[in-house]
Image (cartoon, rainbow, N blue to C red):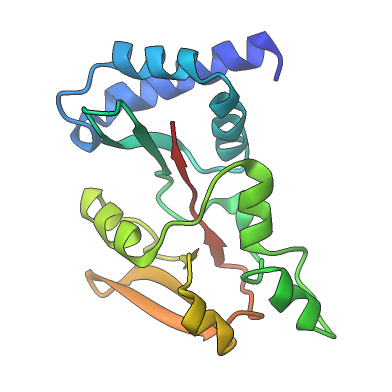
Length: 181
């Protein structure tokens, strides 16, 4: 990443951080910036999250280790990460009408992870997300072994976690990312 892109990204992250203090109460921006400067390799992942429409922001902090948790905080599943099946196995199993890729592979290439069910439910306590879209979730191996995958969304004023065939894909389903710095 070019230094000017890193600078612009840090400015974007700082503005978002300051506009959404309810996501990270009592955490000063200076601590976030220092952590990012100590782990410059993570800036590229944040850049990719931003480029694909994720609007990453800090949603968690471990005061003992200093680890920050960034999450895609866009209102809907990031636009640049939709119409994907769950993983490579599901993609290869599709013989017709194949999607452009898989959520798990794209996340790995970006340097981020999909949230699990517990993380997604906790995240949904921070605001209203996925009211018109849905997001793939990290699926337990036992469910994936049977051909399924989990996704979540918010409908009717509450959050739901559902299952679908891992090979399915929809224009309104993407994935959110989690990055620990």
